[in-house]
Amino acid sequence: MKIVRMTFLGFYLNGAAGSGRYDDISIADMKQAIRAGTVFDVLERRLGHDVDLSILDNDDRAELLREWRGLADDVDEDRKLCVERNGLCLLVAYLLEGIQQRAKEVDA
Image (cartoon, rainbow, N blue to C red; front, side, top):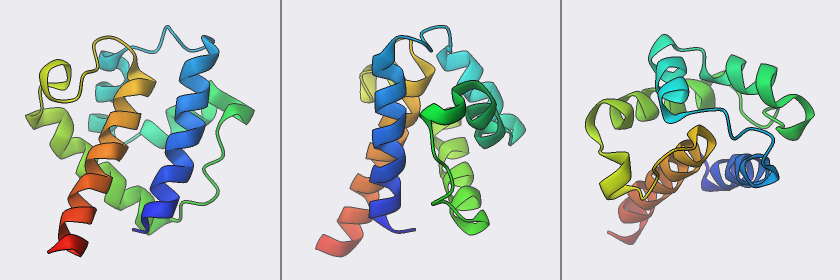
């Protein structure tokens, strides 16, 4: 997946989080949606026009979902990702982690 698509999504999620309109979306909500495989449906339904997922094709969505499932199960978001309460911030942190992992491959 291209990093530019990840940053595009990150900007939308960051903007939605910063608006304050979605403060009720918890980390637990996002982890549940990730584990259920419905995270993109939840984002489209909850954020509406505040997010544009059209840049992501089915392969991109599947790749992010696999990656996010691994992070949701294995990473202490408070300690490693500096996220304590907001589910949208969690997804931004997951995107940043994914970008870092991809950058390691390029830098190697």
